[in-house]
Image (cartoon, rainbow, N blue to C red; front, side):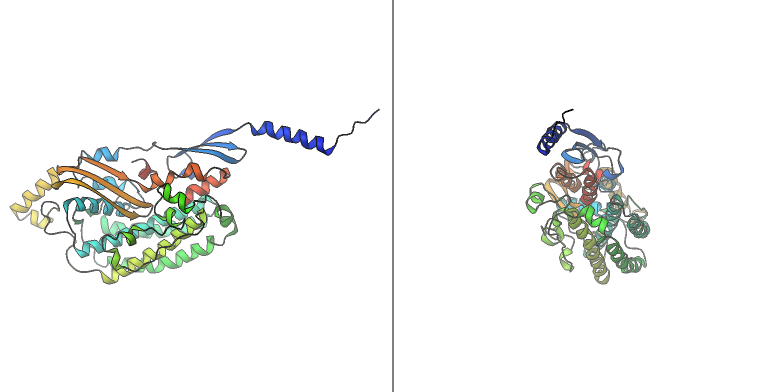
Length: 411
């Protein structure tokens, strides 16, 4: 019986033909909107070649609530609680950004103590948001212990927020022309104690993750965003600074007295998920430094603009004892703080990036039009670019490194 010889070249040729047949097929899967790694109701339509992503189409809108339209039917004061629900991990900072935008429209300057309080709560909100973001990011990549550590610290912060505002999550603390109330007795001492014990915990998380072989392999050179792409896609906050762009509104366009405080702006070099993690770690240390400086230098005085009688409601004791203040309180409550006609735009350096408010006023107590620039929405725009070529398991790490909140995306 004759034996047919088959050369190695024939085998390779047949293998190549088989691979070409397989290469023509793609699998399309849906990650989300109910998936733990999407951090909310985000749907990613992924086209896969094996386990490599060849196309990524993010689908937003599952949480849309119409905040901007609601603002047209609310007085300026009534809209403050709605800003809590944007980045609901940093409501104190959202309140401040919105209030400053309205005060810019009213040409109103708040007193130094009010500015210091706003800086203080904004930086505490930044620490709180980064603690949750880093904890969830670490858990997405398999590090459960870090999640427990960061959430323990966040619970301590929420206890401080509750003492200050009466609420843990949706604080609604800032007011147009000031803040809701002055700082409670001994509250600053409690904040100082918290900040002092926070740094060792951050150092512990640093020791658990920064040189951890698994975490480094999951994040190093994953989801790389070049400096040029970060700028052209409108990224802001830690995602922009992770790509080497040292843009921080607290330094470049100071507001609320940020120019008085000494702090550094951490930036990355590669722009990968690992750099974005390192930037947020250092930002917590810098925020703690700012908080300590505010506590040491906080001025005395009023926590609201006392001359803004048509904007900031009078205190309760005056309402109960003076007819003029009673009428003033009634008018502000029913008709809203009276604003001049005009257009303003203001954006603040929030934990996720630049949170902006555009207000179009035709006068009166209700905005004619409002547009909110949510940093999470803009940061997600780069997903179709950086997910292509990544493994499907890398998509989880990429999403965690971008640290977005869907409440801010689907306004």
